[in-house]
Length: 163
Image (cartoon, one colour):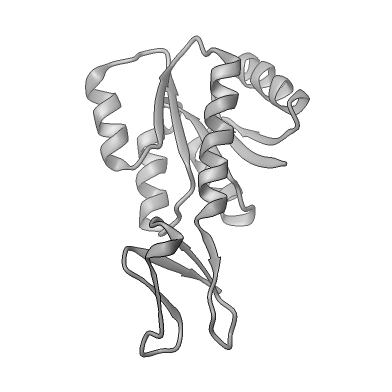
């Protein structure tokens, strides 16, 4: 089962979307502000974040930047009623996995959620060290190299340690 955070200030839309996703066996938390989203992210482990672009206390890009500053690699789908090329490009540059326009096609959204969650899950690798840290990386598992100076599994590409 996937666990996603929906950041949406339109309560009706959020309720409709979360109800539909729960029927599709997706566990959902909903928040309406960037501040509330940060608090949830600090206490829960989400497989994906689905965020509106424009919010009462900022925008989805603010949250995406905060995630990167926290070194959190959570798949992030930006959604908006104001689809503009400039914001789409900016969202992708900051690290959004996808940028989609409202109204959403629910089946297409579910397909993308499942796709990004599956990619995230295949990026987890348990390190071969004596401490058993978990390494989440963005490269293909076959690109790993074993035997770094500190005894951890090293990767040819970027990685983050979660202990």
